[in-house]
Structures are given as C-alpha cells and as structure tokens.
Length: 299
Image (cartoon, rainbow, N blue to C red; front, side, top):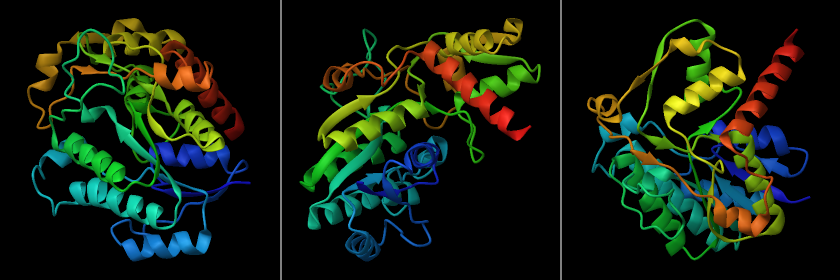
C-alpha cells in the first residue's frame, strides 16, 4: 500500500480525498498545529519519520477577496502559505526524492480567453493577488526539480463541507429555501465535483505520472446555466433564478473575477481515459446521489 502525506487535509478537496481513499492508501494528514508548511524543519522531520511515497499539497489560502487586501505583500499570509509554503514542501520533497502532487488553480490565468477553455499550453497571466501567489507557487515547485505532478483544478464543489459553501451548495441552499438568486449570464466557468478531482489524483498516484494536468469537468457553463441545471436536477423552482451581467456582478469586487474561468481537461483524458472526469450535468446527478445517501444515513 502506497503511503501518502497529505498537507491541507482539512480543506474542501483534501478532506474528500482522505474520506474516499483512506482504505486505498496509508494516509498521514497532520494538522497544521503539528506540521506548519512555513516551517521547513517540520516538513523534513515528518517526511523522514513517515517516509511517504507521495506528498499531496492541498494547503492554500483560498479567500480571493481577502487575498487582494494583501496585494504585493510578501509577508502576508496569502503569499506565505501559497508561495513560500509550496516552495518549502517542494524543496523537502526534492531532498528526500519524494513525488509531489501540487494543487493549483485556474486563477493563474487572466480570464480573457474567449474561444475555448484554457489548456496546459496557455501562458499564465494572473490578474489578482491570489492568482499571482499560486503562480509563484507553480514556478517555485517547478524550479525545485522534485518529481512533480502539477494539477490545476477549477471551482470545486462538494455534497458536504461545513467550513465553507461552494457555489453549487450556495445555489442549492437558496433554492431549497425558496430564496431568489441572481446568477451571471455571460461568464464561463467549469465547476468540478470534488469526488472527480479526488479520483483523478488517485489515478495520478497509482500510475506515478508526472507533468502538468488540468483536472476539471469535461464541459463548461455559465453560472446561470449551472443554477438552472441544479434546479432541474433537484426539482426546484426555476422562477427563483434571476440573471445579472458579469460586469455588474464584478464591479464591486476587490479581486476581479475571471470572465472566462474555465479549464480544458483533454490532456488528462487522453492520458488516463474517459470516465474519471464527468460533465457538469453528470456531476450534479452524482452530487444529488451523495446528498441523498448522506441524508438517508442520518435518518
């Protein structure tokens, strides 16, 4: 059984990976109080003691709006966790010759690519501080020369995560409670089921594959279409869903959203085959099944 050191295991994606695959791998997911990725000695000591085959770095400061308040501040927590923490982990992985799986984001792009979703060949050009710190991280982990799988994910959503609502559960909660919502009609996004991301990471680990991959749903939608598909899947009231333009929604944001916030996972599917990643409509059916099963278990 492969041994996997999981950093950031309390987050949305990390916690799902642990939940799904703790029987497939021997997982060590130390709390931040035990292992702080800003303390390189702690990373080195943990790697030496646990001797993992793989390290997955989910750890990140992901509050995009709060990140913008720290713009340019390399002493700020956003840069420290996202960039320096990633650098420390990659250098430690290199020191012990361990395979690192580093998680990145579509925010390393500028959101201006209109024709089709971003591929691995497109040039990053972050427009807000969160995206910039994640792009610094990509550069740092690549410069470390460790065995590396660099995985960019896009707008993850899950059936359950108590610390933070993702866009799918926000829409779902409001519609279930009869509240009106407004969704953007002219932005393109690739919301991705967390279970699919976890399955993709499992595949990368099982095959020992290195390289850069986009892991996301296999199609893209507008937030308005996403909200309507949620309503259809869960048999909720369409009439509660209104629309808003991207410019109107974005105007008061400190950290500007990406108008074309989408990723293309074709390279991943060509490497590993179809069936691991799904369409957004399929993913929402799986989401409903997960929610129904959880509700059934609580009765």
